[in-house]
Image 1 (cartoon, rainbow, N blue to C red):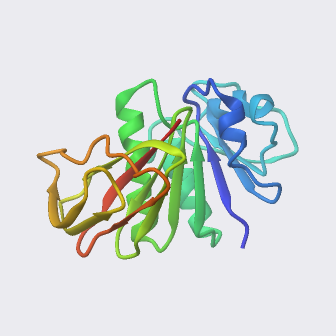
Image 2 (cartoon, helix red, strand yellow):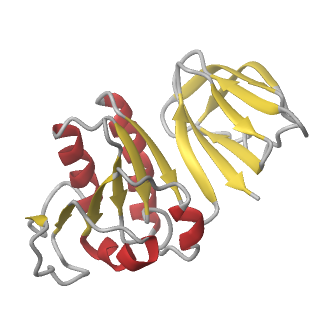
Length: 207
């Protein structure tokens, strides 16, 4: 099954870093002013969605879904739901971090939406990549400068981190105390992170 890439309108400065995550067979959905990233990313849309309050609706043969400006879903949330409806399960989101904090937090929450509906997602920006850690363990290689674990949903229990400067064993991380920030992978090792109950947002910071 092809992966779905959703392109939002947040600023991308390091196009080369983001392009490194793209694949030739990706199915690409551009959201509204995310269209300004076409040249920088070197990809073209398979689907365009948006209410076009921040970008002119393009005159193109590409499939386009024009949304009302007054709606519950943001353009990016609609894109994720539409891709799920089309049976995609693997997602990469770019151009969704930065600028307005409300949009940034809302876009991070899309990772929860995808997980709740049987999908899996990753967010990539100029500096980092983000994904959820839940029932399956996740590795962090030492090519990353730092990694952080943040709770964005309830309380995570049974948190274990091995192979890192600050290890954890059967710990608990809640939304109210973010003590999982700026950990480091031990040189020549890889960190292994697991969560027995709940989920955590893992942010890997590139060097």
